[in-house]
View 1 (cartoon, helix red, strand yellow):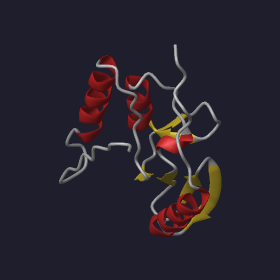
View 2 (tube, one colour; view 1 turned 90 degrees about the vertical axis):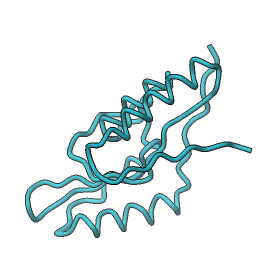
View 3 (tube, helix red, strand yellow; view 1 turned 60 degrees about the horizontal axis):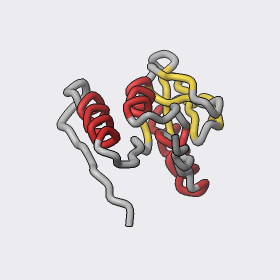
View 4 (cartoon, helix red, strand yellow; view 1 turned 120 degrees about the vertical axis):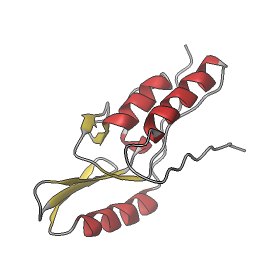
Length: 126
């Protein structure tokens, strides 16, 4: 059975992502196979993934800490604000276009992720 660790925090910008990157790197150094996962994110700071999609920069850093390439499956749903009224969303690497409400984008993207069953690729042995 796969074991999981969940890191939670009381707010934004409190260090959760850096803590996760550190835990990931430590576990990899101890011989464990690990991968980061954040089901949905609201961020304008995106990194391009090896499969042509986007994930948050913090999740790309976490993937690198796991010695894995950044992959859409680690953060299947990302909503991005374009200005004060409009947003754009991606889910599993597919664009969900623009919306007047970031909440709508996150809801649509979350439903799509559940239906597609996005999983990270297997780790390559070195």
